[in-house]
Image 1 (cartoon, rainbow, N blue to C red):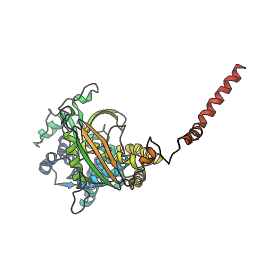
Image 2 (image 1 turned 90 degrees about the vertical axis):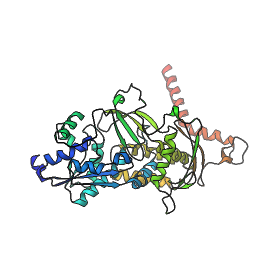
Image 3 (image 1 turned 180 degrees about the vertical axis):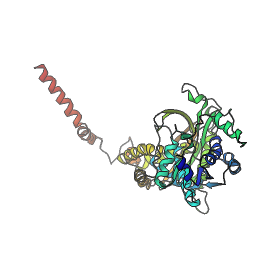
Image 4 (image 1 turned 135 degrees about the vertical axis):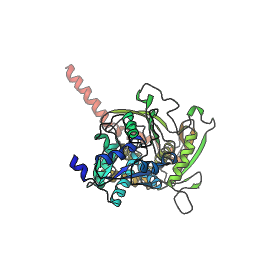
Length: 420
């Protein structure tokens, strides 16, 4: 290990400005002799507060440079929208907010490392979490020649107290303290909350947990309607405002921010789940995804109008499988590419408008229309029509249930044989 450490000349660290990564910079310089540390911060819409002063913190901790890369529009357009088309929801509830941001961060991390001539990548993921697998799987797919350094798997520090003491001994400023209760991760799609009382699954989340959405109990008593317009599976307008990304219109990131504001005001998008981590243990977390919840509801509402039974069934199977692919960090794989292509093919027909009603935590589809709709009022009416003779249903039912009929008759025959 000592020999390997001496060989590392330049490393790019995924830097957030928090306690962990603030300690990692001096630790790298001390343990990898002569190593230059460059900080990399990905702006995926986590907010100005988290990014404020990041560069200054990195330099004060010993980094030679800090690059803040704006990925917001690309994140929504090239990652969130394609995942939306798969309909992926992990374990029935989680809209994958943390895991879907990892591929683009990893990709930008690798691109910067190659650009500056680094020979190593470094991250601050713990040895218990999913993110270490997600990031390193992406690194392996994009730049297997780069060494990956994971300090939490190397150093002997095990607590926040250890990290704070480490920084204090070196007179390195850090805004973190022992009073921090929750671990949070935010991006344009959502914010996650872990730790504190949430470590006990019997304990109800306090009001202090939620930071993005209004408590549904305190939300407006009057519902609000939001109209979303799609073209070939892409969101292009909301409430008549152009969000297509054209020269005159706002882009995908702006569209998501618009929906986040609408949903948050009505307490939409809160979930409290116990999920299965990739590494084998369970964890409890609370997630807020206001805009994403609206967007997912609208998209699925349009799907029900346009896709036939077997197509929707298959698309749902793709969504179930892809939820695990993205959760497990397998974005840059042939399997992911094939599943995304499959979902995109179904999305080609997804053109139309959907109205979603927001009310005290709910996002309910109440109107939908499309030029590609397979719904026919003439066919579906309970009144008289010329396209469906109800007498024909008898033959269909008899053939549809034939295997059940044969099985029942066979079993009755076996009973008669036993009686003999």
